[in-house]
Amino acid sequence: MCIDFRSDPVYIKFSMKSLITYLSLLVISAICSAQGQATSKPSEVHAHLSRAEAALRANDTSTAEREFRAVLSVDPGNAEANANLGILAYARGDYESARGDLRKALTTQPTLVKAEALLGLSERRTGDPAATKHLENSFAKLQDPKLETQVGMELVGIYYAEGETERAVSVTQKLVDINPEDPDVLYAAQRLYNELADATLSKLAIIAPNSARMQQVIAERLINAGDLQSAIAHYQQALQLNPRLPGIRYELAQAILESSRFDAKTQAAAVAKAEEAQQLEGDTASLECLLARVASLENNESQANDHYRQALKLDPGNTEAQIGLARMLVATNHLAEARKLLQMAIDSDPLNNTAHYRLAMVDKKLGFEDEAQKEARLSREIKTTRDNVQRLYLEMHKQTPPEPAGQEE
Image (cartoon, rainbow, N blue to C red; front, side, top):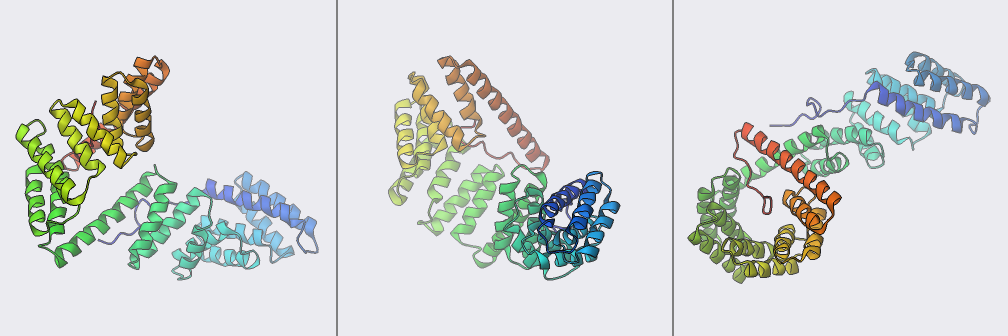
């Protein structure tokens, strides 16, 4: 299914208020620069621009437009007046006029980045192929997040329609970085990523339907659906097809353990597979954390402690190891060291509920009452958010995603 980014709600439009802000900024710039313009009547130009600015601040666009045209009657090449007329035309949906005015402005002053952005948007709406160049040029220079977002969304639509998915993903990721909490941007990103994932999965199913990777993908989908037993069967098929498949043994060990954490035979099977992975593929922090979890389930805290320490040697930034070792340190009353590890875990993963909860407990024991209350509040808020996410998954007729390691109280 092709994504039409312009017909979706993610297509962001300018409000008149924001356009007036842009206009005012351009007018102020024009007033400051008008004195240096080589015109026969600089004072007259300045007066018209001053009146235009006042009209814009009063939201009187008709008067502002008359004053800008008066500027052009005195100074036909005035870039600011042409740019502002172009923005006003854009605001009322007259994209053809906007295109003409903005081009005149850029002919005189090519550095007007916002004018170039709006020119690209106007050209896009009139079907002008020059839109791509102007949108690309301005997107790389814009500093205003809202305008940058609109230009970026247009570029994503263009790239996607032309089959340039890598460029579409690159721009989308930048938009997510700019607007990490914008629902419209996140919605567009998940649609693009989901469609790309489905497309690549379909291609894999066509070119290698009986491959180990296909079996691994099926297993991962089953994990997300909560069907651990079926996932284990497909992981085992993947191993039979390609015993050298990197990472497959860890995923299988993880699935085995999660299928029945408190069963001794299940724990032993998970450990056997993890140790096999260590022998054949080398040790990793993830494998050490899995072995630490099993040791904790067996009430072998000393062994769990050793595994968590080894995990941190392999990957000092591993959040699960930081939280797991901190728990061990709290049990032996090494509170300061535990606190440091929990703060590191929160720096790496600010939304880790368990890290905040355990830090609140440590702070309380150390007598840091204000800090303890803050961390406890954050823990509750994150837990509420996670509960809401789980509810939404249920509403989408999906099994709730597996609880990440260390996400319990």
